[in-house]
Picture 1 (cartoon, rainbow, N blue to C red):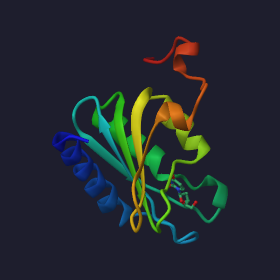
Picture 2: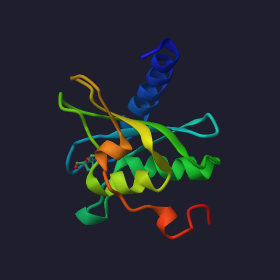
Picture 3: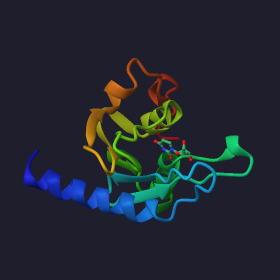
Length: 141
Ligand code: THU
């Protein structure tokens, strides 16, 4: 990893951690932060938002995607997810698909339980043989 990438990942990590502190996770107590480097060069971050009606809570990744779109970003270039513990906090299956909507297969997703070692994987590795917007010819609608 070159020094430029190190610097970007440090900024993404810091953004994910900053928003993670604001997560609303009173039920699981499992606070998650996600930071996206977008095609406009900006970093967009989001946290998980739980709900008393458990199934309608949402993960950090869609919060970050919504922030990206609201801020004018269109495509995901890199993702950094942080959470508690030693194990890498990898995006859930649904979030992999949500990221797939806005990211190419070779986009790197870094999953980091902050007491452990970050795990880097491409979206294509996390969600192989996936279905995406190009199948419907409506990706930029
Ligand atoms: N969670 C995320 O926000 N992102 C992930 O990548 C993994 C799980 C959240 C959902 C829920 O609020 C809590 O972590 C426990 O599952």
